[in-house]
Image 1 (cartoon, rainbow, N blue to C red):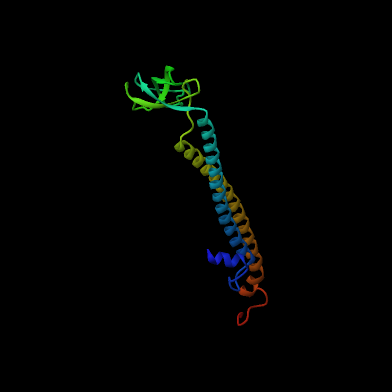
Image 2: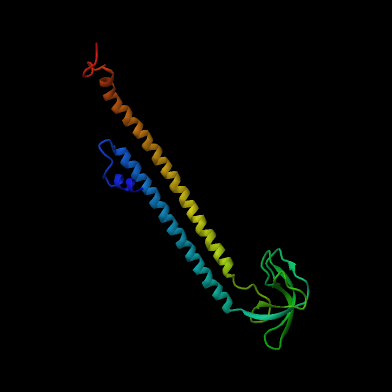
Length: 201
């Protein structure tokens, strides 16, 4: 890699180094730099998404209450978001008291391991009705990671395609230059340009 840096800067390479060789090195270094910048940008995007999710979760939690409930029925998997249960989660009939002195029995999101008679924490609103709680840290991290990975993958693909196109053009350029140089040198080597030194009959 250091050799490519030197070539790209116009240093080293020896007397046989051509401009196209330096262009190849600059293209490679440019692709690596773009990959690094893409990674930094992707991580930054993920961090921004995670921070925004935290702020939103805090805003949601500020309007809800976490109360202790007694599970009344066996948990059942929920296929849709309703009564505080997230899609794909579990819910069961449970009883809790909120506001103070006001007992509520309703469907609420519960762990899949909950059993009738066990106590679980549920989210409720100001009236004591079950509510979908704020997103978990695990969910926020997963979302931020997915966005960061997706952004980096898209950028990496773009850089790879651009580098491939640039390299292909440089290969064609190198071939053309080789053909031009050979057209000048070949007659001397083969003796077709009046013979070569020490050659001929």
